[in-house]
Image 1 (cartoon, rainbow, N blue to C red):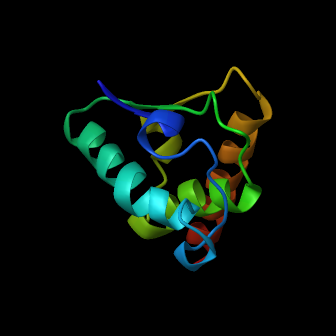
Image 2: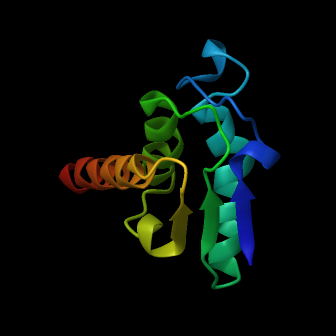
Length: 111
């Protein structure tokens, strides 16, 4: 089973959208961890489990760039079917991620 524990595998203080904004941006997370793990899970016909617990919080720009950016980069409408989002510390994180993914999917549908 493919999994990402953001605090353990990336940072306990993820923030920012782009790499030039800091060392733990959504862009860097997507490129180095989320996309490779997501593609690995899809190839294995598994779901990718993403654990958000333990962080000092998540900026909306980090979440949008990570997960909305994954939709835009892969041009996929299946992201939410292939990822389980686990957040016991802050239940709003899951809703935000889903919102950003759906918005990116809608933008993708318009083009």
